[in-house]
View 1: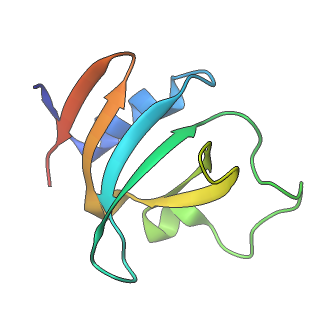
View 2 (view 1 turned 120 degrees about the vertical axis):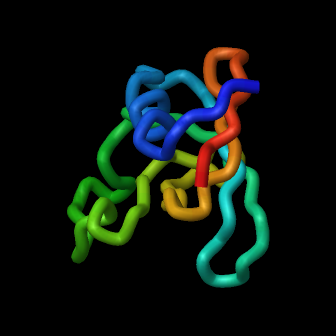
View 3 (view 1 turned 90 degrees about the vertical axis):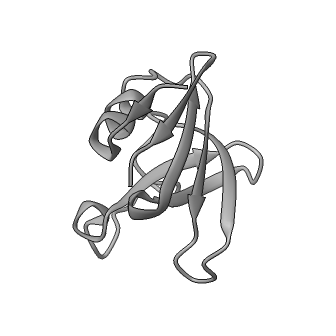
Length: 93
């Protein structure tokens, strides 16, 4: 399994062009691991508005969660694994 940096993981996610990927990351609120199956590049936010903060300054990435059918934030600091285009990556802490 290839080992990549967080920056490389974000680049892979952003370059998926709407294709589905999955990530495992640690939730900030509970400290538990969460698996998210999502897509990037659909729209910037669900209601068409803007957020009151910049997710990048908080090391968050907004993606569409296909299982929950809504937008969610990925904690990039807690990112552990990424699977995209049938390749699984381990994300370096």
